[in-house]
Image 1: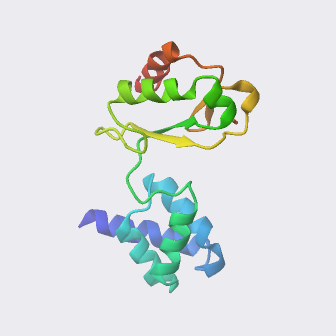
Image 2: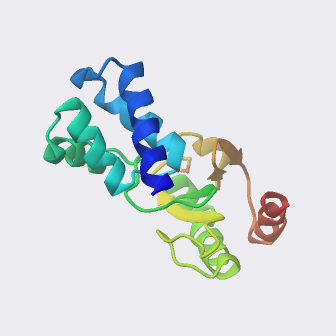
Length: 156
Ligand code: FES
């Protein structure tokens, strides 16, 4: 019950911050994503009630942008670049090592909600290939053997 109360309170704060403006839907979704690390279904229902934005529109926007997730995300989101430059320089091996180390497949989240593993088309820093991005930090010129150490740093 407290969870529901908190969700309502957090939603009201977010809606009030943007004066319930329908044009601020993306900003409100970003705030919700930041608060929960994903977009909980109940929260989206409340957002729809409070702003009178149709739920179908909220889901349309939520599923359009890669930065939003409808499933719980790990504390750290590990993105492996699957662009051409990174692919040529060994990104598939990095992805495979990450899947083994985390014991999940690409697109999944570890059971302890510590890591989510994703692949992305290009992280925009091809000259540093191959790269992975953990939250906002780019790890460049990466080799498979560095993966374990990088994960350990985030586990601390
Ligand atoms: S291909 Fe990897 S950053 Fe562009």
